[in-house]
Structures are given as structure tokens and as C-alpha cells.
Length: 351
Ligand SMILES: CC(C)(COP(=O)(O)OP(=O)(O)OC[C@H]1O[C@@H](n2cnc3c(N)ncnc32)[C@H](O)[C@@H]1OP(=O)(O)O)[C@@H](O)C(=O)NCCC(=O)NCCS
Image (cartoon, rainbow, N blue to C red; front, side, top):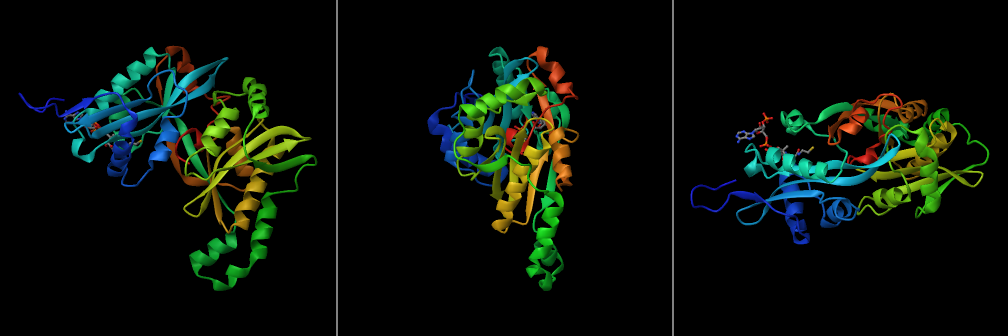
């Protein structure tokens, strides 16, 4: 930390203040080589209720942010209790300050403060840049969160890839392909856009949670914050109702020309509701000329199997979900297999 005898400290950790947002946005650009926005940062990390400060910050001798790590505070159903879990995001050291132990030192202090405040678990998708720091900071590998891919406009993909111009207009291929996977909707099931989630969706979550393995609280608050209020993300939420009653929702957006499903949440094994949501998402995307849709799910989980039955192929890439156990009473959740965690891309900042 010291800049040498008599010199100013080279770097120091200090509390995050609102005026740090532009400096952290700059640091993000230097660390990841792509931009983010102040609005997105504030939405993601400064608007959620939290039992403890969720951001750790270190600055250089000019008070400029040079390290940052944060947790998105979430309520997670673990056994019969709702516990605080932090989803670790935006771990970054300025390229000029790497390999000097900044991540190691600041992160272990942050995890200690979270533990003292009653946070049960840290979840994250540490990438290969963490190297030896994954085990050094207590991360345990849990399971993969894998990409699934479904072509929506196969004629467009084939025409583009193989340069077959004649196929570009053969829209009947797409119709046939999509009908193959999406059968007719069950009677009484209706899908529509959800503008704002209210108490009905919190009640839906409360009724389902005893039947689920470990799962993020997917109540009205979650739907509104994660998808409808996500600054700059452009998520749309579709709701499915059966005989007028909430039966599930799907969050969807378009990124880099492809469709991305943040999550599909229905009662376990309610394939008709799951399929109705996916069918409706596919119809909306194909009407907008989007050729492919992707989703993330845990291989072996029921949503993963549902996606596979609906024409999604296993993608080549997967994230490795890791956990740091802060409260030994929830250690079981890290090793849990059946009924396993119900996780989706929307639980992280990967979608
Ligand atoms: C990942 C990242 C945050 C690591 O930050 P860092 O401050 O360099 O991390 P540390 O210095 O604590 O540890 C990094 C390495 O330096 C080593 N190290 C730690 N202290 C050291 C010291 N005093 N002298 C020499 N090496 C040291 C560590 O053992 C570790 O070695 P390894 O690469 O062989 O595993 C940084 O590389 C980064 O910002 N990457 C780009 C953004 C990114 O991808 N973030 C992860 C998102 S999931």
C-alpha cells in the first residue's frame, strides 16, 4: 500500500461515495476494454436494499479508482429460509496496478465484512483472469451454467453462412422449423406483455418456493428491478396466465442482433406454460427478423430439459458457477445436486 518511505500511499481502500461513479465507469473501460454507463452502474449496484455496504473501492494517490469489486444483494431461498446472498460482479484492477495483491487484499476484507453482516453466501462466475485467486479467496466450484441455442430463422442462417441467395426468401422453411418445436397452445393459456409486476407475482413466487431447490426470490420486486427497470438493457417481460391466473413469466431482450432469454420461470414441470412463453418469444423475435435465441441454464435442471425439448441445442460455452461459503450452515447448498439450484442468466450479469 505504501509508496515508499515518506512518500504518499500508493493506493488505499476507502468507502465508496456517489461521486465515484464516473471514476468507476472509467475503470471498467480500462479493465474490460468495453464501456458501461453511469446509469447502468447505479441501477445494478446502488438501488437494491442491502444489509451491508456492497461495494469495495480502492483509489490511487490522486484519489482515482484503481480497484473495484461489488456484490448484487439478493434474497435467496435456502432450505426453509430466505437468506442474503451477494452475486459478485465487476471485479477489476487498473491494468497498471495488477499482480500486486490488490484483489487478494481488498476482497478478503470485503468477504469478512459481508460474513459479519449475516450474508450467507457469495455467488459468482469468476473468469480465467482470477487464476490462483479463485481458490485463494475461497471460491468453490459448483456447476456449469451452460448456453443453449435455438435457431429461429434457419433459412436466414443457412443463406448467410453458405451464401445461398435463393434460400434467403424461403420463409416457409422457418415456419416449418418453428412448428416442429412449438405445438399448439394448451386451451385456456394466454401470453401477453407484462408492463409492471404487482402482488399477483409475489404470491405466485410464495406459492411455488416450497417446491423448489435453492432459488433467487423471483417476486414482483425481482421482475421489476432485474428486467423492467434495467437501465439501457431493453428487456421485455412476457407473462403466461392459465384461466386468468399467473402461471409464469419470461424475460427477453435483443443483444448484438440475437435474442437473449434472461429466464423462464414457471411451476416445475409445467411444460405447457414454459412452452407457451418460449413460443411467444420466438414469434416476437422472428417478426423482428432475429435469427437465433440463446438462454442459460444448469445442465440436468428441469428448465434445461424443457429448453432441449423446445428445439434448443446445447451451446459450446458455459460459465462455471462458484460459491464462497460465508455461513457454514448453508454449505450444503454449494454441494447440492437434487433438487438442484434453479439458476438462470438473469441471476448474474451475463445476460
Ligand atoms: C482479475 C483481476 C481483478 C486480478 O486483480 P489483481 O489485483 O491483479 O489480483 P492480485 O494481484 O491479488 O493477484 C493476481 C496474481 O498476482 C499474484 N500476486 C499477488 N500479490 C503479488 C505480489 N505482491 N507480487 C507479485 N505477485 C503477486 C497472485 O498470486 C496472482 O497470481 P496468479 O495470476 O498466478 O494467480 C485483474 O486481472 C483484472 O482486473 N482483470 C480484468 C477484469 C476481469 O476480467 N475481471 C474478472 C471478472 S470475473
